[in-house]
Amino acid sequence: MAASVRPDFRLPIDEYNYFFGRSNLLSEIERAPFRVRIILGGRRLGKTSTLNAVKRNLLGVSKDERQAFPVLFNLQQERPKSLEQFRYLLIARLQEAFAEYYAGNQANWKKTYRRFLRQIPGGSLDLGLPKFGLKLNVTNPDCDRSLIHEDFRQDLLKIIKQLQQKQFTGVCFLLDGSEFIVSQDWANDAWSYLRALKDTDTALKPFVGFILSGYRDLKDYQQAVGSPLLNIAEVEWLGTLTESETRSLIAYRSQEEKVLLTETEVERVIEWAGCHPYLTQQILNEIFDNYPQEKVQFSDKFMLHLIRQHDRDFSAWWDEDKRTYGFGTTEQTVYLALLDRREGTAETLVQTTNFSFGEVADSLEVLAGTGVIQNLGDEGYKMGAKLFEQWVVQERKLGKN
Image 1 (cartoon, helix red, strand yellow):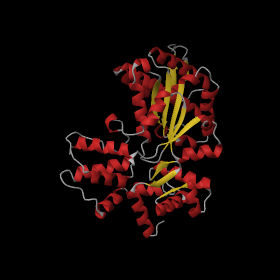
Image 2: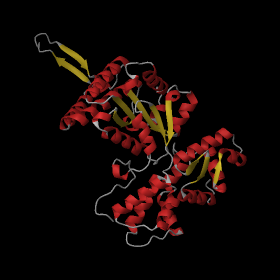
Image 3: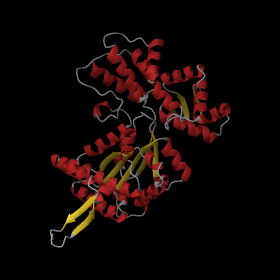
Image 4: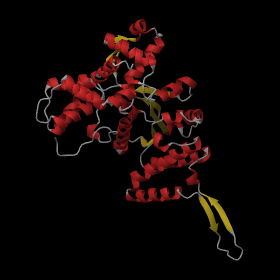
């Protein structure tokens, strides 16, 4: 095993060398960063890692090519309680990112000071006239963490002007965990507000982009309410890596770990992981940690060991009653139908599931967007990760599904 400390790949990847794939999506965003995009993908499929790569790429271009200044934050962590707080966060995170990028150590002081301010709800201010005992009660807007539309708009215009003086054209907000918003009672207002910024605000719309990441909650919400934001958004499912991208990932990891894998071993990793980036990384970790000097035995025993390691992941993917990222009855039925056929299209699977064409097509999209089956293009799909497939087979034998 290599002497250097490597990531365990259970957390999002923020190191350039370990990120593989998504090149077409990254190129599209670099060419047009001021659009509205919705990136959908299952748990551990690399949504946050992709946003990290977007941020890195947008900051990495030369001054002559700069367009969008990226601002990345996770809404699941921030958890704004209202549209006014959401506007506040957009500006606060933009200000912090701007300060960090240009001010270095000074930014650390500013961040510490802002954190201090946020803890002070307000208070009584002595006016220095003890004879009259005059005091003024004040509140702290930073503690309230809210912005009305006009203040938000003026702040954003001001910062964009500063960015343009630094050779950036505008700003691109990378909103990870956007499914948080759809669970809030102000979700409709938020989507309508973002739509208005891109649709009617002529001073802002050419210079502001939004990339929202999420999964089925975000997707289903859009369908349920006919959100105006979806009408102008480009929706992208991540899916698995290509075989070529997976081979490049394996080759790089092998080089870093100084462990040479045979072609047969590489093919087994691809087959068992189904080009799922997380599963690929975890199988490689197991090989490099436990079999650095010997041939790997891709036996039933080894597969059972890996299945046990990922039982929680697979259970979360399979059952929506346990996790919001899980499959419902329709997706489960379509997956089992595809398991029997190995390959198929929505049209061929309609015949064995008794679901409508739209239901089957939608389920296949979700399954591929979770990474457990692979999209062949031309509306065709095939089985993906063998590890997950065998987990499902075992669960059926035990009568759990």
